[in-house]
Length: 487
Image (cartoon, rainbow, N blue to C red; front, side, top):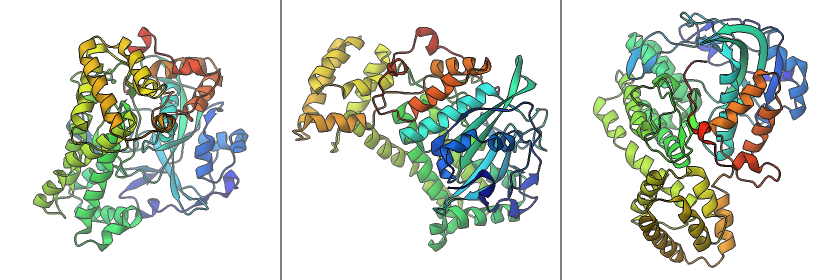
């Protein structure tokens, strides 16, 4: 294992030059202290869990001293925000510190959020606040534990530096990890500013470093678009299957790697409501839960538009037609697993849609339903779950069909089915009210609740004696918390 000062940096993106990013030195925060760290994320850099107790980690993340080998850069990009193109985005409060190679040969970007002003900060202060930093940390590590593609979070650092949002708050930093921080908006920036040679350079860099298999294809640029589309379809299938709402699916928040990226006012569904809007600022419901799939398709078309200097438009349109079939296939397979099926039947999609419609009409807790369905033998579990539904006749018809469907699986081992279901249906899910309680404690200087919540959510499928309260139904007030983009 390594020391913090021994990480092997190889800063490829920085070597692209000033056309793509700007050198910026992090601005220190005052009286920094560690809020929470992820042992799993530390391990990605070959670091022991004990490194979380090393004062040097806080010093690096607080901007108080330079990280040996790092070359902090603010990346240039643009994007469509709520459907409108904004040419002036970029890393306004985050810095790409550099790229670290671990002993397995994996490359990880180290990105420090809340590092102060950059040339892209516009009127902002370049800071992050404690609440948003904690929320991104918890979500990043929890989604990874659920098996949902995501950026990672290594640690959160608090400070005494005051910042103003709706009220006075305290600045914090988040150290984020991802194999790449390139977004759809990077390509849009060079396309709309008519820097087509820089666009080609970016394409060649991204394909060579992250999609090398595309180089063997007749049209590597179209092949790249296909790979991004495929990964995005798989990501959206996971979001929809597990009830995750991103909240701000602007093109500058879409990763080329198909990972969950740039967490803002996200939420997991409590009661099943396909029209749920988790972002208090989203007045039109553009980024509602049931609109995430068409928005992902729209964002891919925006990326495709940025590639038109080098890829035939008809070819891109042909690729876009693959998105919905890919999404539906991946989503259906995930939902089959959640229901305990190991085989496929032609009417499974209709069967699942009927269940979701019944859940919607009864405000059934989305995550708990699937977990409870595997808690007991199927018939016993269905009798208990029946109590949660309003349309009893509709539920009885669905339950009878479900039992018949399970019988056709020809699986005699009921225990094996239930174990298989528990392996994909979490007992613990990141509820907004749980995050809020941990944040309020942290703002008072008590970091133990956020650390405990992180530990529980890192093993979401496991029974954890003494932690049952984290699996309880949310209180009514907890279902109606307003989360905005302000961070």
